[in-house]
Image 1 (spheres, rainbow, N blue to C red):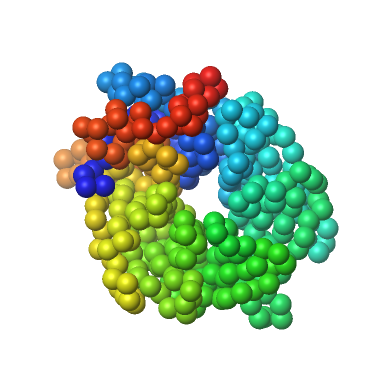
Image 2 (tube, rainbow, N blue to C red):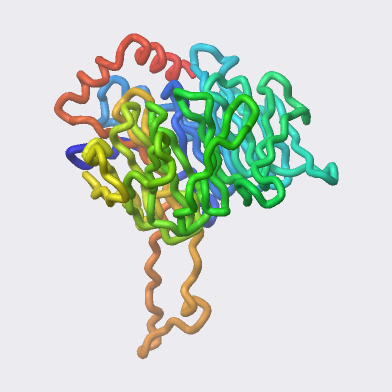
Length: 398
């Protein structure tokens, strides 16, 4: 990230067929073979990487078109990949999604069909939708966030049987809707973010509350992420420009703060590279911010960390960002709901009767970027190893 990434390809025609079909995030598959997107038309789209990317033949990269479309019945709240997914084993190629007034669906990532459903019911025995989803690191369980509750399903047992774990009892604990979930990569701990503007740490064994982080965000939490070593937790909220880094060894204080432009309630994702050094986030102005977390002094507290790099990725809100698991590739998605100015409903003609043109910043696209050094790009692809080559071959076959 010493220089701005180079855009390779993307998808834009797919999202121009319907008005205001803006994207709402993108996520690389765990094996890096494909990209999953969510958009306002309530369709999950799966894109395979063009084979030319693996051969360093970038001059003839075509526009990407979805290999699969998986349509939900209403607004998609959250979606996630099965963490052990690999294209070499079709049985592991699936993902989960949750949408309004619908059960949680498990989709086959090879054929785009529903494999199974998980159903959650409230105290009136009415179907209720999960607001957030996350598989455990081993993929054996699916954790789902609801109002003041986390429900735990066993991946191999679809249906309505689940374990309920309240996060607030008699106004004690973490209230609000559990809007985001994440698991520590090193310990048997998971984190819950809620619209009550706070985050809590819980034991995976029985859901015991281990720590409730101080309420420091200005809006409800929309995304949280553990560092690869499990020592740090990054949290971000809606209409909140700050990403806070918490040292979980001393969870009472914020270690440092990262600032971006977030002026809407939309979920703005951020991501860490595999080493945990670089944190990357989009913002509502279309820019991408890159911070080097290794530049923080060892005993820093409440320090504002300046970005190492900032570049414009889209003309509209960059809401989704995802780093490839092992190659220096970056995926970004953009778009947001456009509200017309008050003058749009009035007479826009000027003094001579000429209608003034309306400035449009609509940009509903998925883009793939090369974030490595361009002079050694071919070598970097070759050095990704035998496992990377196998994954690339599987992606081409798929």
